[in-house]
Length: 197
Image (tube, rainbow, N blue to C red; front, side, top):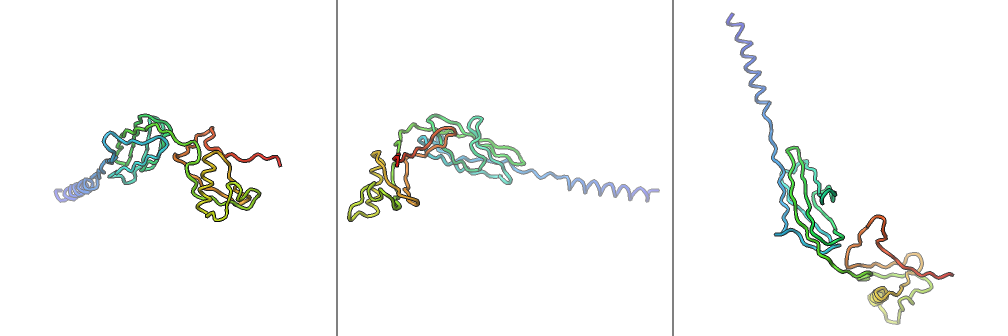
């Protein structure tokens, strides 16, 4: 009788040992966020880009969420955002993995700034053939491409017109601030001639 009980007892002991070695849970570490922010947070002028590239460790399979209050700013690890209005802002980054969630806040101070309401710089000007080509702005013998670009910039800054000509003419302009795309509002205005003929 002893002999018959030894085998079931041995099988039960081996089965328990096998289960205990398979039941060991692998504990993954929580994500850790290092915002690398300056003392007192970030400071910038309104309508300038804010770039935050946080260092996140233990981030395998992580999801990211940048918030300003209840508003979602981004679902990417790195934040690229612009503030249209001055003020104090608190942004929050949430990093979520299978191990849990890490949250870190950062202060952003946005300073008021007055910008030019119009063209700040003309980078390129290439008119196509048309009625007013070389008249708006006026081309003179010896004018170089760089001189014509400067003349186009002067004209646009003073509220005058330039002629882009027919199909294919163009001007590349720069501004001293980012133009925000505000839904439902006019964000950018281009004026043109209004001749009847």
